[in-house]
Image 1 (cartoon, rainbow, N blue to C red):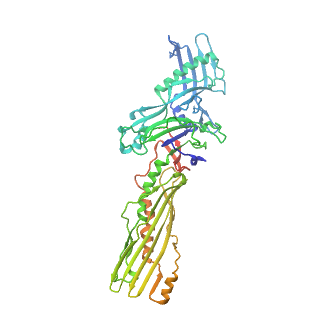
Image 2 (image 1 turned 60 degrees about the horizontal axis):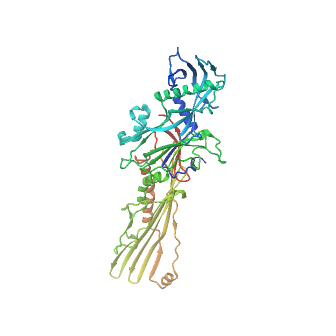
Image 3 (image 1 turned 135 degrees about the vertical axis):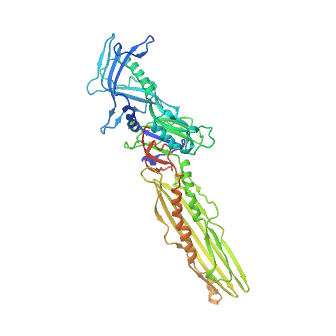
Length: 529
């Protein structure tokens, strides 16, 4: 199913990162830590484990910090997202090789890691979100945030940091795997490791990412800038409802905009899996009620091309074939009507102005001219394609009366159908390309048959009705209407105000498309700032 199954209803934007993706990014975090760990601890008067001088320490731990890898050498199990303690608590796993834990005071022990059996120490850690100052962040993160805000100015917004609060780390005796260590030694080791985790928090927090939040005091925040942020973890479930692939569990960044409130409770499941491909690190979705209006607004200027102003001028001094009529430029502000995204068609437009009519009388007769026009356009989304299709229909009539003679030349209703697709590239940018242009199909002409009454008078003489191909109007349809749609769309999709994904410069995007619900969805690769 992939991205097509995603459907947002209660949240404006969700960024979902798989456990695989989190672990791959956290490998960078571990790379910055000292791999050769040596911990020296005593016990103070209150029973707390405190760092000690190596020469006098009661308890000594040494080991090489690392992490488990899969068959492709990708890091795994640094973090386990789904736990039994809630959807904002994770397992953080510390893996040591060449490890030894011993005491220098009674009761003495000296536990050494067995070959090929790394010590995996697992902690339950609460995820937290806190406000941070821009100048305290890594340079890459500062630059990414400033690029996202552009001219808006950082002082207007707050920066939220999602992190694992290592100060809350609780040693998980059940889940930890320390082969060869006695239960007595393990109880002491748990306290020492908790102190070690706290020291990590003080020096190098376990960061999952940053987000910019607009305060509620901002009267008109940009459409897609978060005004509320939350997070949770949800499990991957297979078709049988089983939690069968923990590596595809997701850490979800939940975003609301325009001061919309969060639902009363966090989701425990979505009714779909955010990612079902282990080669994809994550996915992002923007609710269709947010993105589609942006898309439709950008396409709206092209409607002027199919909304001409009708012009006719009857002139008794001109012949029946020389009466002026034209499709002049649009003088109104046309707009689409939006429809339910679930139907695939997301917007429609129709235009049927009053028939343009003019007459000119002269002694013994007169001439009348009429021009009718209608047009339509629909916009639909499916996969990576935005399709526009429509039609224009035109008909004309010129009647000249001279004495008892009536000449009538009619161009029957002639319909031109057109279509064009806008396709999103797989590189993740929302730079639409125009393809499958169809603006030159042969028109269809409404069948016309002279009535029996017309044929009677034609046999009597004096009335002549003919059906003609109005070359001037047909040329105007092609040059002033059909041939202008593609250039208008090109100008629209190349607008400097085109859409930018939230999180640009933090994620690499791929395969943008529309889900079955019409949400804008995209695969992403998570990058730690």
